[in-house]
Length: 494
Ligand code: ZN
Ligand code: MN
Image (cartoon, rainbow, N blue to C red):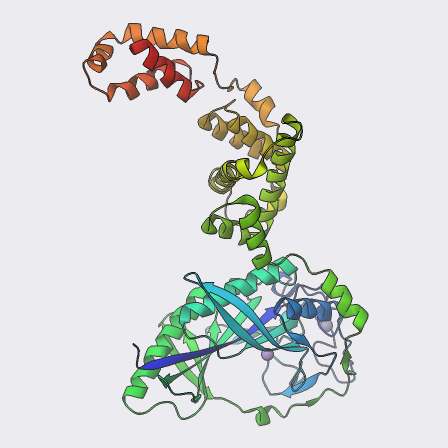
């Protein structure tokens, strides 16, 4: 057992994908727009301007709070967090201090098949600061980011393993994507994370001064930085010189180390005080009801439903759930297939019997065959293959009207053109040959022209059988029904 227990908490900033900024009408495009173009006197902090709260940002914040099982504060307020930095032209950030939008939630994560509950301390709304762009001899500032809406999520110090943090972040990202409140991509900066870490001797219940690690731009950086910091603090404990004060360290991606930045300000240093230009934030019962009722199915709910309905393995189900759009596509394809089965069996069919076979087939044709045709950053809305056509292709394969190599050819054509797979099979002459007489003709032809091999097989060289099947398949131009060929060949050889 480890001598020390690791205590980790996360502070996460999530950029909300509203149309306009938090307190002004500027476009919320941020870094996607030309630098310093989505700005106005309000987000530049000119004197005499007044902020107006973005109602959609509040709704998105509420949706996330509910998804994270938080208590909503019906009455919260905004506060000024004062500090001086060039990326903050007002000299303060409008945030929420003592009464956040929501608090006391939790999120369940699963690591190595074990479920763990991570507490959410609070969720509040605030505005983003501008972005510093450091160059060799100067720092440039892009004010586009200043004033963009953020939800800040602070977890309880419930993580005990570094891997739990990335599992949590991945879950959070997925929830944000399902809720359509943020792209939540660390690499793009719309999900940013600071991690607090401290150690304590096993069995001790006290919390010791922590280190806050900043500048974590990817899941990998989170893991590497926390592992580094855990070792660094362990060494300090072993030398009896554990950190005496909370401090801030930056992660240096190149040197792969954390470096001390500053001894952390306490709350008092920020001189928080209520924002005089904004009224308290009141959440009406109607608004709360509306947000609650428009919550979509969340990833964990969908996971359990998919497991139940489609009978895929845990791993395959997770693959689908982790790609929201593809999970929905998969479901549409399956529903087409069910409708088809219902029709051909005149309403009498046993879905629970067929579902495993059809789900597996559909899963593999989507995630291995179709995915292999996609380039990086493929946009789902550009997909030309409708769920109906995809289902049609699966059906052709399922009914063995085409074999799988023909299926691949057809899929590639469908991907380019969006054409109907049955038409393509016809046009490309790829329909599987399953007519036994026709196949028997091919088998006889092969037996006649390979008498030497046939003799070897008859003498007991079993491996020759495969060779002969291959010959018949080639004779059929790849269109022969493989099981039927094998069956007929066996009959003719005995
Ligand atoms: Zn503005
Ligand atoms: Mn913040």
